[in-house]
Length: 160
Image (cartoon, rainbow, N blue to C red; front, side, top):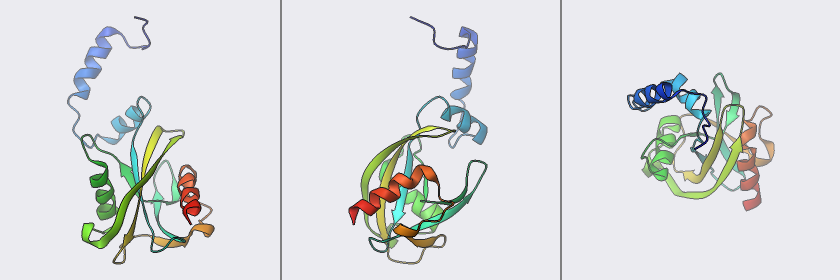
């Protein structure tokens, strides 16, 4: 078999041993290193009071500063719907009884400077006010919006 890694056999054995010790969620530097090796599965949830508006939250980390559709990374052995609910609760303060019409819509593949991902995209309506975020018209998304998620906005526009 052709060797495709620059790691020695000893380094591979050491790395496998270390990875077995990683607890989830992984420490951030480990997470970022893994993103360079395997595709990641983000789960985004568009909270929409109607077909023309979407709830966006502000982000300010080393990879992006600006508005985005709330989301997270699917954890090992986590079900997609559970991940969407985790995002709603953690980022927005919304629990399952606060949401109606939660549904999986589609998926999107993307590549950026940090990762290769396959986003699982959900939509829902909130029965109460979110503790975070601002509603924007789909036709007036802020200029500092996460460009990798523009495909999600365009998808929603096409549903109207």
